[in-house]
Amino acid sequence: MASSPKAIYYALAANAGIAVTKSLAAFFTGSTSMTAEAIHSFADCGNQILLLFGMKKAAAPASELHPLGYGKVSYFWSFMVALMLFSVGGVFSVYEGSHKLLHPQPLERPWIAVGVLFVGVVLESFSLFGALKEIRHTRGSRSLYRWFKDTRQSELMVVVGEDIAALLGLAIALLFVALALVTGNPLFDAVGSIAIGLLLITIATMMTLEIKSLIIGESADDEFKTSLRDFFARKYPGVELLNLITQHHGRDIVLAIKATFKKWPASARALVDAINAIERDIRSEFSAVRFIFFEPDVKTAEKTLPKAKKSRTLKRK
Image (cartoon, rainbow, N blue to C red; front, top):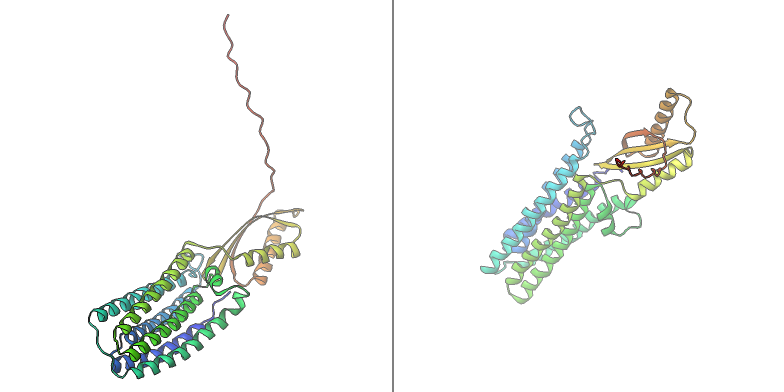
């Protein structure tokens, strides 16, 4: 379950190179779409640095102030990245496009922009391929949208979302710059900037809503819970799970178990030893589980209480 920084490094390397080339192309062509894309790429570079910083902070050991560790700090930095994508990338692109829509300016040497955008599409495709490769083992047979909704790995979710936004943004910019080049109408370039901004706002909003749910606290996915129940059925058939609560803290899982023993250990010390053995085996089987709270209990059947008899008031003669 631990998040790998490889996908973030892929995206950072691709966006750093693309940001510089986009900026040069925007300077020489005056393209609004290209300017929006350059700002988007620089924002993405900053975002990936924030994600790496968040992953480092999330790995800090538990403390007295934060007894369950710092895993959730990765959600905070992912949330900040989504806000930056919304504001620096989306809102600014819409503003810049609207400004050029009211005050259009002809493009200079637009073929430079077309060439840079085409190269950008190729580089972003490699970055997205690297991110998809990193999530392949956790995604399984699920669709990309289903994985996006189900994953608890906010860093990978943000990187994949950014890569998709960047690739679609490049395609939109390439289309509208080409239209401006063919028609000679600079309004197409301004419309392209607005379209890129709306795309970034949409993807950033989707990421923000998913990260909000993670900050509140989400349980482990159904696959993990099914595997855990199968583990108990296979290795500890004499233990019956009464209640199971899981919650993700970044890359870690906090596990609370209430269970009963079909054959209770002979003493309190034997019970403690049995619980400790179960916890060791769980951590060995499921590396993402960091904290376990095991509560032994008895299984009680609901009893129907007899209805209270109505009291009779004695009448005085």
